[in-house]
Amino acid sequence: MAFGLFKKKETADTIFMGGRIYTQDSDMPWAEAVACKDGRIIAVGDFEMLRDFEGKDTEYVDLEGGVMLPGYIDTCGHPVLNAFSASCLYLKPGNLENALAQIADHAAKVGESRIIFAYGYDENILNDMEPERTRECLDNICVDKPIIILSMSGLHCWFNNYALDMVKNAAEEDEIETITLQYLLSVLEPFDFDTIPERVPDEMQKYAERGFTSIFDCGAPEFFASVYQNMMVELFHENMIKERLYGSLLISRDVNPSMAIRKLAQYNTNCVELEGLINFDTLKLVINRTDDRNSLSTAILNDICMEAGDKGFHVHIDAVGKDAVFEAIEALESVRAAGYRKNSFTIAHDEIFNPEELADTSFRQDIKESPGTIDKMTTDWLCIKNAKNVEEAIDMLTIDAAIQLGINNSFGSIEKGKHADFVIFNENPLDADDLSAFKALRSAMTVIEGQVVYG
Figure 1: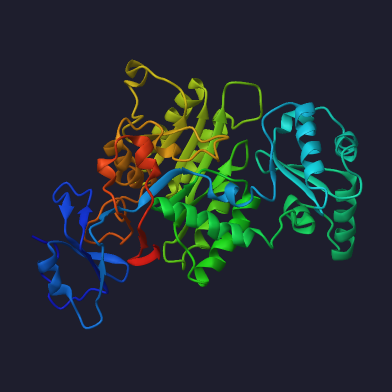
Figure 2: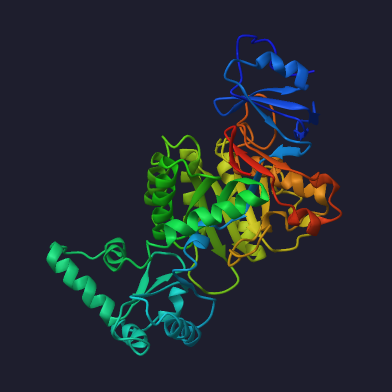
């Protein structure tokens, strides 16, 4: 049998056949062929039945006995930060002395670089220090080239006197009266734009090799995210996109909720004409209740979640500590109670709960659960960290992932009307002996919008 056989005049651009198709559709778990038109699935079923969709321009793609699955979706990715890892030192958590030691070691290793750039310091380590003293700390490392360190929140930076003089001189020439963080970064240009445009396609290739067709970015400072989005737009126009990007706006300390949501709306608007390949529709929040560091206050957390609900944005919260998890649950349940039903809500954490602790909440039901993503940008397959077996891992990578991101009406299974995003393996992933063997499989072909982008 096949679905979608009533429109006899409709013809397919492409028909995939010659293998086994694991659809993730409970009404028809396995199929022989898939017909696609304009990037969408128009029919799934037996090959002979789908030949009714053949037209004079229809292309057949032979799977050569392979197994097709819905394209994998990484819900715990860090494509943005990964893209800049060769051009930026990512600081490990620590105090002022520890941060300075890391910066000094990095400066020694990149002696020929025109600038020393790092990201990730906790603003608390500079508390009670005069600006002159903070600059002196970095001058002790280097005085003849700029040093600029972006804070974990992405809202503040730390620099030496050489960098300050560069920015002051530029501001005088440009007749700028108020120096903003954005202006400072635009003057110093901390990234090597000769190498990054090459690194992004390389990172996309690595994802495609493993069968990923969609990646959710779990948070990067606005500066990184905006540069990455611009590069992705360029790759889109060059027809070089290999995965869909679902970007997010990172907020890890108190900000004006309305301004933050307007900023996310701007990023979202920039993606309108990018055919769903580049998306920014998620508010990424980080709350930490395990120490005294600056973090989102309860009041701002509640207000910004409500604003996101009102504007239709999804919310992904990294919660550190059990108190933070319960606070996140309460904030998101309040948004639901206010009548906002279409948003997707996720809480990422590494806590262990007894079922009784969550009995009176909608957590793990309406509010989805994910492994914590803070400081885990290099962790492969983090999204299936809690999978008990291969079948559960495939669910987490396909239909469950689509539900978590709020895109399950268009992705996550191979059904009529959904986007034609597939991965094909020579071996059947369901036959993998264990999760290690499953992760080792490499795609024979990866498809986005019915077009082969890898293999």
